[in-house]
Length: 331
Image (cartoon, rainbow, N blue to C red; front, side, top):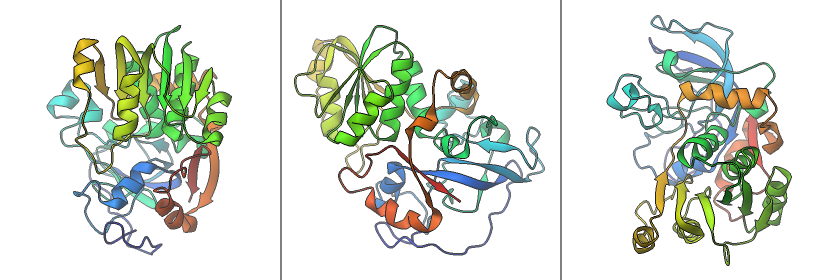
């Protein structure tokens, strides 16, 4: 936990979470180490209540159930989207839980999953059963990076077989996007300054890799999976006329960057945002995993312990720190 933005991150004993009436308490088995956690610690989301326990990608076992929960019981192995929806607002009634107007996010609105226990509200709306065939280490990324990439590629970007797709930034979410787009029959270019990340992109399905987007054009769909004004503009610049840009990576402190709207209008480009995936959309992704079309376990780079998490979280601000695949914390 940390008590101030950018301040020391420490491992502490704290009181266990209280189980919400409509929620559960989950004993965390594994949780992902994500650059979004670093953004939170840096104060790029100033609404995070302090002190804060980070962590929003998790898999674990239900150990306590609120009186209002009907679908879940102690012993169930579950994950949850990083956006936990209310289920009743206007967006939720349309099925758009990922942009819930009263959303909660572990690690951002309340204590997260870098812990033995985490409380999750609206369990009947947000929990997802994890198949036995999916390991804890692989499942830890399903709540954010893999599911976010899945929806960004399949629903928001609507990638089709035969299209040319560029993925800018081949960290956890970018590698997932490469794998998913390639599995759909696209020809994927993985773009990353890290040779390690480029090699991983080729390993999970990229047809081509590059250090930068220089000289790249005629892309049907391009995703900024890193998140910066420079990668956003580079992504838009690679598109063919009427191509589609999908912004996946968070932009950090610069949430209002300059966008080349002249090119967007003149070339009829589509600029799209993608923000996670609702729990009710997980079955298609899990079916692709069960059928072997997708293999999130191949993205796993390193498994560390909770005691290692403070230093590794702080290190995510270093250039190249995301190279090498997904890092998972085993609790």
